[in-house]
Length: 519
Image 1 (cartoon, rainbow, N blue to C red):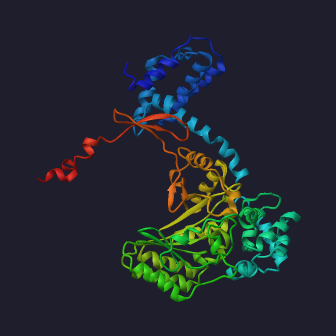
Image 2 (cartoon, one colour; image 1 turned 90 degrees about the horizontal axis):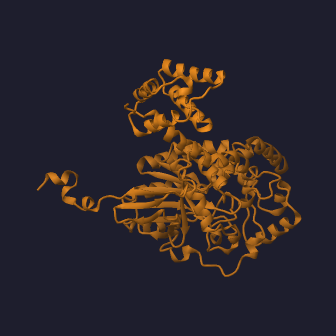
């Protein structure tokens, strides 16, 4: 008999093995119904269902397909029908013995994540009803109107910057309040009413709370601080440069809120500043005079706190520089104060992106930061720029588990944002040493994503140490002499062979593609 492929023969050998037994009438009726459906319908699914049921009965109870009056010939007709219907000629043996078990095994890998993700790491969309309740309470406490809440100026006017106001908004133990007082003598605290509404009452280490409200460790940890990277990578005014083709313009020290893990904590002074135009002109002059530079990141602080007119002017000046091909704006505004993103700003982004690619780079650290409001803002931004990229920071208690990080990456992807980097929390700032996560934990979290969630939802895991250094463990175990590479699947640990390119072919440039047609 021609089974078509080895897997179909294997399937037939299995279902016809065992004993021909008497079976219950209800079981005969079930199998007969499946058989008739497989014969009558022009679909592959009923055929697969029949063969899977026969295989299960054989494996579980040793019942041969002969027990139901089948012979190999009539079932082979169904196998041929399956192959003929399938657009790619997939055989029933391949589907039943390989494809479906592979999918079932893969589903087991994400069962725990799917069961826990909305409980351990709910997004702001899933928590929206509670956030709305928080909003009403905060507006009443602060005396805010709807106009105040829905405007950027209102959010900044009523921003929570002192312990007295904080204690009215968030129910914290007295000792925590005392520690916040200690910290705010040295470092700024500011969270907008909107961002405060994302904090879930009763969650002791709420991920929003941890990012917004400083704890005593920030002063207790301070020892000998390593000088800020910018001190030895700032070749010109307002400029940071780590790479020959990329520079950063630190356009302001202002943010709508101040994060407890801020890499630029030393640059966030006691007073908000937008610098004079001469400073920006000097930075732009440096870029003009360095033709290697093709990519410019405008950050701060937060680039979106700049007035629209200034953002427009800086982008226009960059667009005039011929060797600048790419631009980026760094901001957390869409998750901390989405009210800032107005139509005028969106039009500015679109106009600049039409001239040369413009990307918006944001930082979202927990799915809780994605609400219906922030998602809509990212959707509108994504229509106007070439990409919206996320650079998360791996932070203790906030996103340092597979469930939390996977949920974050899937959630932001659904909110029109591409997961780009996950930074290991900086070692240079002892103020937040308590928020750092061991590298091996980060490796397990990120590498566990492979084979389990969408490929473009998986960020690169990075350490900042005089530049961005990838922290992924290598999955290349050996370059074997027979031309194979021995690889390890990070999601299962399975060792596999992967044929490498033939070096003789690769280095034979004379025979490559169109070259071979010319003497």
